[in-house]
Length: 324
Image (cartoon, rainbow, N blue to C red; front, side):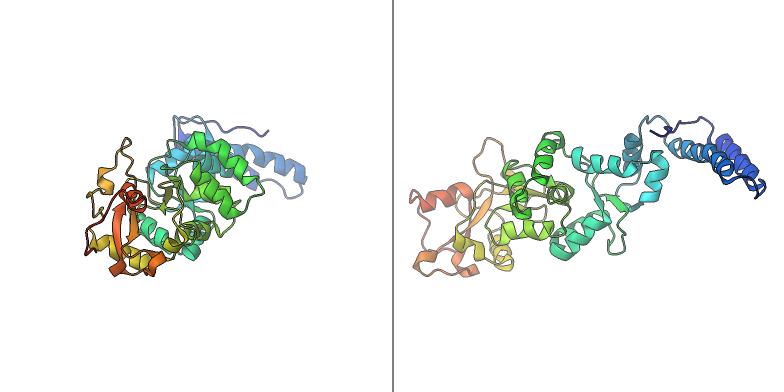
């Protein structure tokens, strides 16, 4: 294992000493054996690394320094080269991954932004609105801490993340398994990307779970304002009937807006969310049942909470005539 960086108290003096060493190297005769010249560069390299790690005094590990650097610059694009400098370690990239995946810090890379741009632009726009700039120009080794708060359940997720990543399940099935094991809990895009084995289509598979498979996978923009930006949550471990999966996003949004984002029967909305209340999400109900020829139009759909929706289908609740 290589020499660990050591923090120094006087960065200026350290920089001057390194500069003197570099000047001595420049004065070496070109005929000096290459091994001698290489050996003379080693203490200079160590000195520069010590200076870099000393920019964040009081943090005794590369991972802690990387996190501290991000927290000083939330919502800003950070280059990998900067992280290499302040971390003072060779394996800074592995420590960064630990922060993103194991510790749950929402640090998104240029690669992840590219995946979202290709497969889930709605989520991308929400993140860009949060951080205040477009991410189009970000390179693979540029990173952004999109929100200065970690996933409190990250440690619990980690064992499952590792087992799913190494499984033979499809990308979509791995993602669904993770979400179903964490119903009601936010999962970051970076965690989903990790489970997918870094496959670029992970964002498309998440979207398909909601729009084609009927799983209530929601984001901050889709009525879950309390979850971190860039995260996804499975609101309920319940797949909607096949005919409900064909409702387009535009129709769904129009119905929710018309009904004020609340249940037309009991008035429940996401603002009333309570752990002890079985009402967890809003669903769209066909006034004229699909089996009777009802279609997926704004005029034939009404917003109900999940409890009232189940009661209607169990025929223990009748809706007023004339709706919607």
